[in-house]
Image: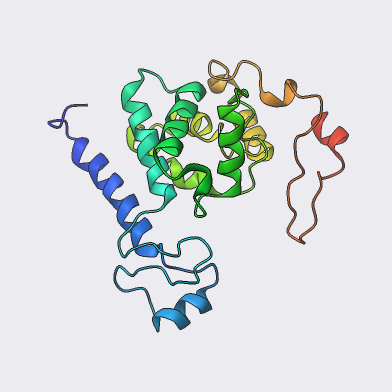
Length: 222
C-alpha cells in the first residue's frame, strides 16, 4: 500500500492506537483494586510496571507488551504475502518469538510458549493453537480489521487464519465456520475437528470446572 492512499492515515492511526493503548494499560493488574491501590487512582499517564506485577515486572513506562509485538509481526506477514495463510502467520510468529526472549520470557502466555514449541518441532500449524484458553488472538488481530474496512466476511476469514497457529480454541472456530462455512471453505477445506481422533482439550466453564457440554461424543456429532 502506498502512503498516498486515503486509507493509509487510518491504518497508521489504528497501529498507533493499539501500541499506545497497550503501553498505557500495561501496568494494570488483573484486579482493578490492585491497580488502584498501587497507582493511587486511575492510570492517567504512562507508568512502569510494579515490581510485583505477575507478567510485566521490569517493564518501563510506555513499553508495549507481546500483544502489540504479535500484532506488528502479523502486519509484516500481511505485507509480505499476497494472501494470508496459516503457514505465513506461523512463520511470522516464530520469527517474532526467536527475535525476542523466547522461552525465557515470563510475560508471554503459556499458550504461546506451548504453541511455539510445537511449531518449532514441525507440528501442523492448523492444530497447534487448538488448546488455547487465553484471549491473545483478540489482541493480535487488529491489522486484520485495518485491511478489511467494510468487509466483515473477509475480516472473519483472515481473523481465523491469524488466530489458528497460537490461540484458536475449538468452540469459537466451530461457531465461526458454521456461520460462514461457504465463504471460508477455500481457506479451510477440511476443518481441524475432522482430522482429530479425539478433542485436544476441555474448555473451562463459568463455574470453574472443565469438560465438553454433554460430552465430547455428542458435541462432535453435531
